[in-house]
Every structure is written in C-alpha cells, then in structure tokens.
Image (tube, protein in one colour):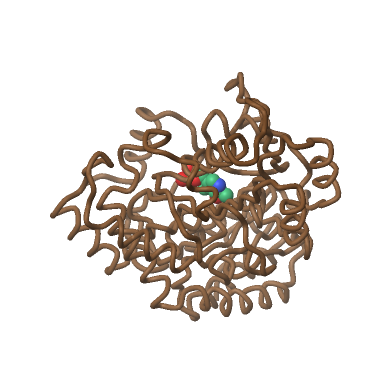
Length: 415
Ligand SMILES: *Cc1c(COP(=O)(O)O)cnc(C)c1O
C-alpha cells in the first residue's frame, strides 16, 4: 500500500524541486472532481491551468486517445497521417483562420509565433536583417524556454538563465499610449505585438475596455502583427471561444494549447492567415511529435466536446453567476475580484497573509485552488462543472474567506 507521505517523499527525493505543489496526491478524476490516494474527494478549481476545460478523463476524448494510439501513434511529419487534415480543417473552420501549425507544449507554440513574426518581418514587411523587434508586456507569462523567460518581468523566471535572446521590448500592460510611442520609436523594425488578452499567471489581469481594440488599430496602422497568446484564456475559458472576441477584434496570429487536448496529451498550435503562415517553407520549422496522429485525433475530439457540449456558453453563463455570488461575499480579506467567464482572480489584501494559506485551508475542505503570485487566488474550474458543485464551492470559499486570520488556522466545526 502506497501512502501519500511515502509518495511525496519519493517525489521530493528523486525529482528536481522546480515546483511547490499543495501536498495532495491525486490518483483519479472525473468531470470537475479528483480523488487522492486516500480516496478523499476534491473539486478541482484549477483545471490544470485550463488544460482540462472539458473535465477530467472526458470519455469521448479518452476514446479517441485509446483508439488512435492502438492503431497508429506517431509517424513524424516525414510522412503524412490520416488524422492531421481533419484536425486542421476543424480547427480552422471553428476559429476562422485559414491555416494552422501544430506543436506540443504552449511554449513551443509561442516560439513558433515568434519565428513566424520575425520571418514575416524580414520576408514580407522588409525589415533589415536581425533588426526585428517584438513588443511584449510586463507581468507576462508565455512559457519557460530561454527565449521566452528572457522577456519575462519576473526576476525568478530569469535569474541564472541568461544570456537571453535580444529583440524584445517590455512595456507596461494596459496602456495603449506607451504602445503607440514604442511603435513610433521603433520605426519600421517592429514585427509584432505579443500579448495575453487577459494575463493568467499574472493574476487574471483584465485590461481596460478598448485596450485590445486600440492595439488592433495600432498594429494595422504601423504594419506589425498582433499576436494573442490564448493558451490559457482561449477555448472557452472566458465565456467566448477566444478572449479577444470580447472586443470584437481579430489578431493576426493566435496561440493555443492547454485545453486544445482536454488534458490528455500536449497539443498546441498557432493560427494565422496565408500571408503570415506562408512564410514557412519545408525545413524552416518543425517538431517530431507536432501534428502526430494521436495528437490530431485527441485534439479533434477535444474541439468536438467543446462545441457539442456548448462549453463556451456554459462558461459565460456560469461565470456570470460565479462573479455575482463572489462579489456578494462579505470578507475582510478581499481587495478585488476580477475576471471573465469561469476565470476569476480574487486578490487579497497584503495583510491577509498571502493566498497560499487560504489555498491550504480550501484544500482541507475539499476545494483545490492554486495561488498565483502571492496574493491572488485563481478560480478556474473545468467548464463542465455542475451548478450544484459551483454552489458548494461558493459556500466553501465563503466560509474560508469570511473567517478572521486567526480563526482560519484553527479548525471550526462546520454545520
Ligand atoms: C501555460 C501558458 C503558456 C505555456 O504553456 P506550456 O504548455 O506550459 O509550455 C504560455 N502562455 C500562456 C498564456 C500560458 O498560460
């Protein structure tokens, strides 16, 4: 019999210490619920950072995974496979872009977008060799490769990993005037603006109304590409298929990942129209696993589930309900509540003692949340969550957030 303590000890003994997880050892999941090795049940309010929007172990996606991997799992792109075209078509028809390029992890898709933007700058826009510049934003999160952490504003993500890739300029998030100034100062060298339409890891930061629209106007005016990283915000999380749709705009490149596979398998991609995507020629870019038959079959099923179960509309409807109930919570600890759809950040007052201890307390009560930065509790349940489970979560959040700091650390009888 393996117990939780033993498993944690082994993990910590043999593994690199690059995460600080809550000490809950999960062994199975279904829908919005997960179970630990002692058979305690938890409501998952993180959904693997939005990778399991479709819920844990969705039977239909599971079926696609098992079926496809039994038949043919990997071919590499040296050969064609019978799943890829169907997946491409589904994804393009759903999103309205003419082409896609698949990768595996989110960070790889971000790298792909950066490569596309630079090549577009040199081959189409006519930027002088090695001068292309990409505007990025403070508090961003785009993944963990050395190029990407090089333009992070988070000291810890960069510390000890330099030297970094040049060609990125960091600007404050949410201020369109500084973007305009950077575009003017950058002259013709700006290839792209790379932005999260809502910053996820940054603490569910929603930019001011009209900001993304203004970035769209500026990109068009200055002939640079607008790239939206929708890896966490996309595929229904905010109550629209993509978060940028809240402003009725259309970027030039969209980056997706996470929920693209419903949590079964790493699948990511970029979406763009011909003018941008046609900069890639055979041999320019690739990945051994990118676009493999298993990935294509799994992602096709994950997209079908999203559409057929109306998960985007569900996120909008339940998200509105969640926000309304949260705003009605009486809590001495809450400084701000923000978000869209089933994606909410509860920012706590600095004197509340950090979000971590609330997450620990919620875990005790069967609700799994993860802090982002020190003072924000992130709520992001699978989009399939049942209304009664959402109500239970709200009640539990209410109990934990309304308690005084002292009471929160002593156990109270729950009626
Ligand atoms: C998670 C995330 C990434 C990185 O995805 P990985 O699959 O972890 O590499 C990039 N951008 C955003 C906005 C993300 O949330």
